[in-house]
Length: 130
Image (cartoon, rainbow, N blue to C red; front, side, top):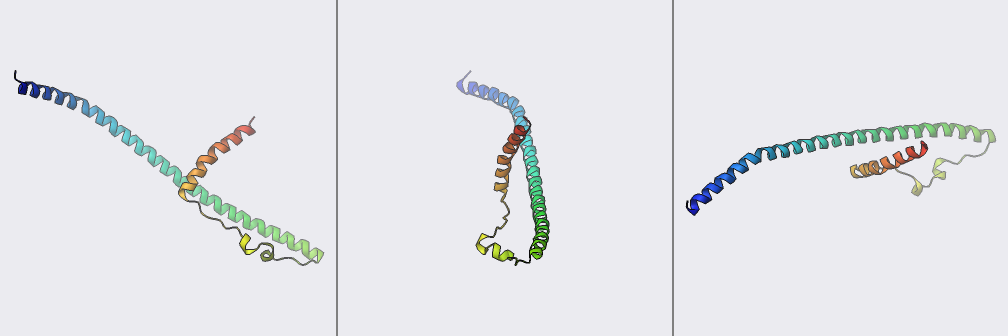
């Protein structure tokens, strides 16, 4: 056998080994990709669920705050009308520069809040159950 024939024979053996070994590896890669895509979709679903929950929570807090202010205003009006004392307006009590505004959290802030909040909540629950 010449060197060329040996090289061709070795090349054929290597080609057979590669073709024999390639499909199982490709199948493993495809399975891993499918698993990764499934996990990404699950995370997307959870993020959407968190966004929805946060929106509902914000609306509930705002609604409850409005109801609470209404009840407190009725009580304060009754109390001050009973004493015949002048009532300061809300504008006098809260200066313009002291007003609190609610901002919507960005997706990154929501995720960080969830990551930080979850262990803290679990620790609090664990501490309460002791």
